[in-house]
Length: 162
Figure 1 (cartoon, rainbow, N blue to C red):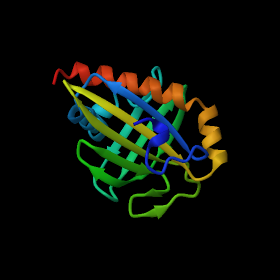
Figure 2: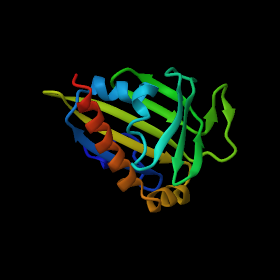
Figure 3: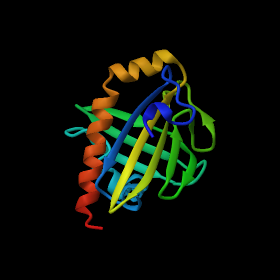
Figure 4: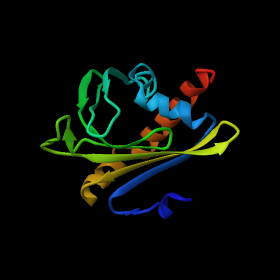
């Protein structure tokens, strides 16, 4: 499946990164859902995650704080869908308790497809509320940034030795 053939793909609203990673999907999923793991790979280095609170259930908090060149960036959101080892969907349109965000940016749709032999097809879709926001995210470096993060995720997952 190519990104353009994903269900509900909208080229005006969706940015997609798809990679085949040399790590089992269970380990990748664990890296996405465990704060102690996520803090090590979630933003392109040398930036870093300074705080992380994950309540991995529908409606649960998905909160991260980054330090980007001395600027603190807080991202608060909730999980919309959780299918262990297969799919995670989260958004910043709401925070815990279904409180609407003043200016939502995107919804992330992550899938982990088992390719066998410890390999996973990892697909990350960033779905935006309008074409202008999608364009801004692309210009901010979505593909380079999320690509770097996918590589960091793969290396971190491999380092867990599972």
